[in-house]
Image (tube, rainbow, N blue to C red; front, side):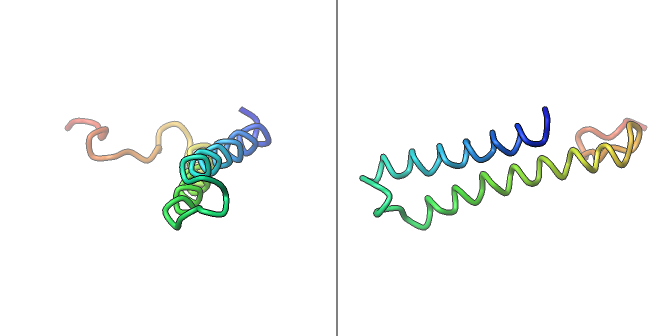
Length: 74
């Protein structure tokens, strides 16, 4: 996926989350802090995903970050 299309998709996802929250609450004027935190969480996830992709490219195939459940057995 190209970076422009990724960020466009991330922005559309964040806008969809805000639109859903606005529709559930009766309009944009009645958004709550939790709705804005959801918007921020979507953007933070997009940034983390993009940074992870850059880190994976930099580290190469053999040195990917792994959790304890994915580490090789000894």
